[in-house]
Image (cartoon, rainbow, N blue to C red; front, top):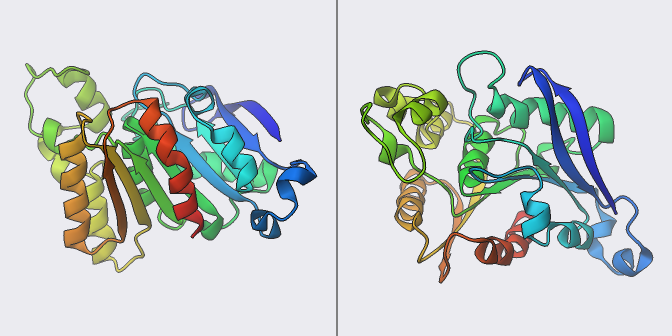
Amino acid sequence: MALIQVDYFSNALARSTCFQLVLPNDSPSFVTDGNDNYKRKMKTLFLLHGYSGSSKDWLYGSSAQELAGKYNMAIVMPTGENSFYLDGKGTGKAYCSLVGQELVDYLRNTFNIAMDKEDTYIGGLSMGGFGAIHTGLYYPETFGKIVALSSALIIHNIKNKTEEFKDGIADYHYYTSVFGDLDKLETSENNPEQLIRTLKAENKTIPAIYMACGTEDFLINENRAFHQFLKDEGVPVEYIESPGVHNWDFWNYYLEPSIQWLLA
């Protein structure tokens, strides 16, 4: 199995950036023999890190490398900084375009993977869970399914806030720099709920979503609310709650079940 860090120039960010790639292209026979996952094309999963994280978080915090080999799945881990994987205003802040278009094209051209929607998935934790949902919905012709763990679905927490606003993570100026005008956020394309409404109005296929969140997680109510929204809108969703907090024990526990769901 190859573990590769790719440093390349990103037009979306107008600078050099990097991503991590786990590529099970040389798995030994004791992994491949009798393994039905090696009787099909290699799948590709984008895994997005959380707020204050980096492209290496999934490598250090989870069993991503082992699972890549077990399930014949390339795992791509980009750097999203603290962008919520949204396209910000101004040059060099197009993180949604980076993950959903530029990086997909790069992988296709360079590694011949993620060639089809049916073979390409996106997932993430916390801020990356939000990013996976948003990017997967923004590019529904690219990603076949979405995995979202302990997602930071904070749109309703920050909408219409004023300049004095500050929470335990950031302040008004950060949120406006990332999400845009907070008074217009609810109907903005930065709101996953609005993307779903738009996709339904355009009669487009909405990727199925897998959600998991710990019952002691500080984001549990936000995840419950979004799950209910998906049910009300008729969006296919697998939703799981179990004891757990906002940490790697929970995310690593649900990584393999979510991969199994992707491949089902």
